[in-house]
Image 1 (tube, rainbow, N blue to C red):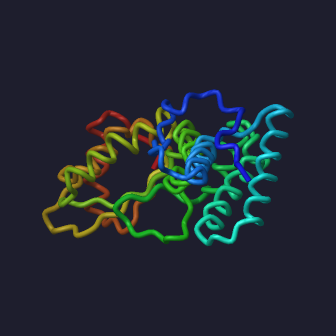
Image 2: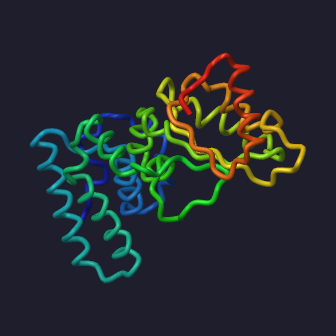
Length: 240
């Protein structure tokens, strides 16, 4: 049975799809169909009208029939994957507006701050993991600054340039102008250490006017006094 390779509701040229895998003329129709539906799932190109939905349901039927009629293991595996993608495009969650998805994201990661430079559970769901699911979810997560406003960082005098740059260029900007909830935890603090010598802490203190809540973990009195001095030097005094 011949499968319709590309769904008729696609209006975006394939050459402009960033995740599209260009293939050779010798590639099988199943592989080309797999690539097309993979891209549609990643970009959330789901059917909008009743006509488009009917067209997709017809494709699902054709794929199911082709899967039942073939005995080739390779073809069966590929057709099964295509069927998963096709059915995924009919999932109700793909029709939810961005503001509702944003609320779901906020509820999902509630109590799980962005952690950088500190140990975290592999099962913890935070804003980072939301961006790993698909392009659609990544774009939604990056458009929601509230998801990036709760952070937990460890810092020390040995903070690398790459770690500091990543914080400054990729994490802080995503919170935009949202008030920040911060948890700070020092690691390997020598006797002569001062917070001002920690590059990561310097970046965070530069945003002190946006601090809403601040939680200090394993800070001794000397570190607290030095941190307060840094804050005062910025001419801002948040509620600690």
